[in-house]
Image 1 (cartoon, rainbow, N blue to C red):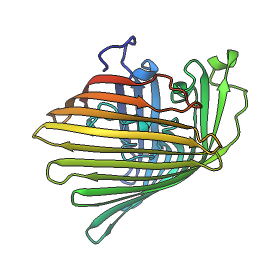
Image 2 (image 1 turned 60 degrees about the vertical axis):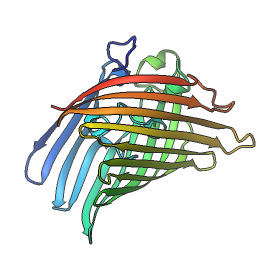
Image 3 (image 1 turned 30 degrees about the horizontal axis):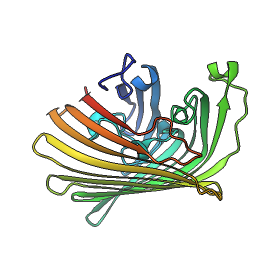
Image 4 (image 1 turned 135 degrees about the vertical axis):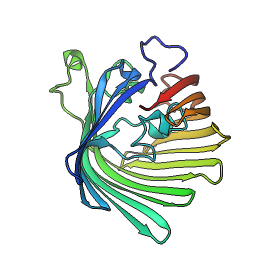
Length: 314
């Protein structure tokens, strides 16, 4: 939780429950709900999907899942799996993080390399997007990603793991005002569909006691703009201690004569201590710098944040 807040729960606070029912050795149902401090403790259904194991190495899943944009996307709500108190916002801060659809994954070994290939299709609508509030703080904006088609490939050997991702989708938004802003069912129309393409590359290297991580993302909107995000982390284990430094940057450049852009970076230093195999304590300091152009005025400006967190999995 943050050191100072006017909320009952600090924005980074989370409480999650996950359950799984195995109907047979091939068919199961998984559900996960999360209550977030950033949404005043309101519970949300993050996962609800059925899994069917076609063969031991291939699984088909249908339902609601986390959208696999980044390396930590699937586990981003489980603080114990993360070296940070909160993920780098330059890379992980997008307005859609889930999808409703179908995915199929296949595991295979090539020599001494272990690989996992995952392909998916789906759609998602985000009512009253918190992401959009960073640009229009007092307004309600909804986001919709349709015709999502993507895939990711994990490949690992020894202390090295890499990940490649490619995804395309059509994005729409709508600004909601008046009495309609108080309801989730709104008759106001959606805007024009913009085609996005995303390419990602991640690495996680753990030679000896070192931790070296990178995340890269290129996200062009066809004919409108181009966005990219990147982060790099360096840390080292000293027994139960893990100090780590991370630098992340985001930039979106408009394809018009002005060449205007949105750009911000964050440098963080985190110290993690593992209390038990299922709990830890983390202290993180963030230094945020905004370089936004005239079309992207900074809403919050440069800032510093000190966060203390306790993670427990039970």
